[in-house]
Length: 225
Image (cartoon, rainbow, N blue to C red; front, side, top):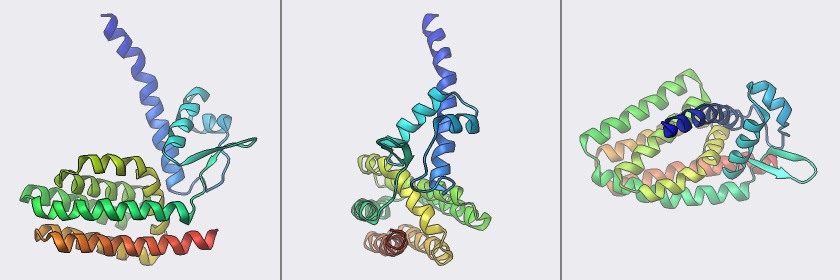
């Protein structure tokens, strides 16, 4: 009975924190809060309709994800995304995603391919609706399926730790019209290689996709810097 009571008490704040966390994370990824913007506890508390203690938890969590940094005498700000940091993220993705795509293409069953195709269609739908957040989330779901089919669960854990920053880079590059078409086309090509069960081609397609995305991110970020 006491155990039930404890679970009940814990449940509400966790749900509220998760909702607030999602909202603030999406606001940073979409650019609603820009790089370097100050995040004032009181203002966020009013905007979200939650207590300041919940806001403090959210800020701590997003700091661990690399979306927020605490600056002395200034407080929490939206982390500034530099090309130096972005380049490292793209390099890690190249290593892990090429290996995962290769094994995914080798192991994918018809059911796996159907799941990946559903993920791809969700990206297409989000692109049609021009919903950047949905597009980012759909892309993340596609990669999750790819890694899990490949049985690269530890690699996926590593990618998940970077996912907020990866999502921020995706949203940044998606704002460039040329990239929206090319990005979906690149991911369709990755899927086609998996659908053909062609490991070498899947690996190559991932490399092409990330090379193009990294070049665009470099152009945007070095220009901003």
